[in-house]
Image 1 (cartoon, one colour):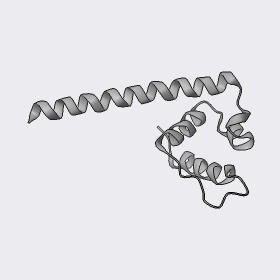
Image 2 (cartoon, rainbow, N blue to C red):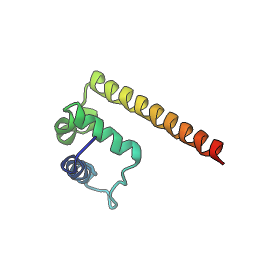
Image 3 (cartoon, rainbow, N blue to C red):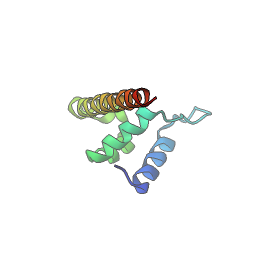
Length: 90
């Protein structure tokens, strides 16, 4: 899905996004990484890096949230299917 350059951009954005008074950097969760990947795919990564997530329009944020939810459901379904096949083999 993403290449190494996109991951480098995501890490750069995370470093820029931390508040100036914060002492520890925010650890990116799987959801955060997926959000950055989706933003990159939609061409919104530059906007997020400049303005932050609050700089997105409701339509843009909703689109990212919808795609994120869809991918999480697909991932869960795949994991459940994998578990079912693992159990039936034993």
